[in-house]
Length: 83
Image (cartoon, rainbow, N blue to C red; front, side, top):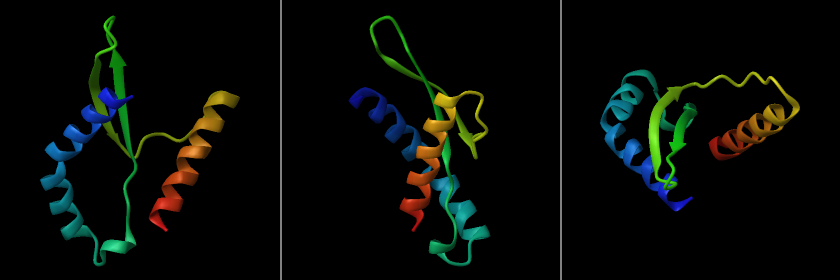
C-alpha cells in the first residue's frame, strides 16, 4: 500500500495550486467546505501502481452490497474528517 500512497500524495502535490486557488475563489471560510476525490489506480504485473485518473466528487451510488458497504464507510470517514 505504501507505493499506492506515494502515487496519491504525488498527485495531490501536483494539483495543490489549482485546488487552493479554486478554494480561495469559492469558499469564504476554510472550514465551510471539503472535496472528496476518487483515485483510480491500477497495478501492473510487478504490482507497481499507475494512476489512471482522479475524479472530483466521485459517484457514491452503489451497485452491490459490497459497493454499498465500501462507499458508506468512505462517506462516513469523509464526514468525520470534515467535522
